[in-house]
Image 1 (cartoon, rainbow, N blue to C red):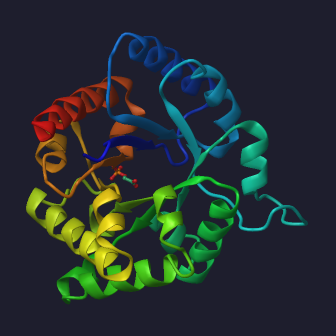
Image 2 (spheres, rainbow, N blue to C red):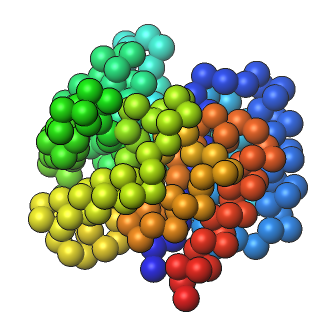
Length: 260
Ligand code: PGA
């Protein structure tokens, strides 16, 4: 049984004050809520230390939304994996579609980031996903194959323990157009199969593959119950404390059902 993850990607939202209020509420609620699933939040990088502080003693993990692959140097505006180590942060998001499409990050850069994070023993949530025209033209599997092949270049079998994959179809991100559970399940099964063919059955069975793209309270159950969906990466709905808590609760119910 794979431990499911309910993850929030806050993107560039919330002031520090709003962030602290959210974590006060989440932390005090979480203390009394027994959960098997992992809870992981990627707030804006600027607030990482405050969020780590706020969640000390809780079973809530905090990660950064982006890093640069070099350890140190003259790279104005960037942060690095050794800096994460120095503040006790273990998680990073890599390859999000907004990084790929707004900031023109390519597979090679994404791969460098992954290798650098692995060198520093971080856990990575690696995002892949096709654009709308790519799906319409029948290229979904080709796009996923390329993103996986180049993004995971030189990543060894053992390193795969540190990597969670997030399937996020670009046409579903922030659009309200969620992939149907069937479409998402098909893509997840395709990714798991790719892992089997390119690594091993062991890696494929262990790998956690999250779905992201307009996940909400109303649709999370149908997605999470799919056999190859091991959790969610949630943007908009993770900003609202009540919605995020509801999704965590539903995730717990689904995990119990899957366990039986
Ligand atoms: P969304 O974002 O849930 O707002 O669609 C998901 C993401 O970008 O990770």
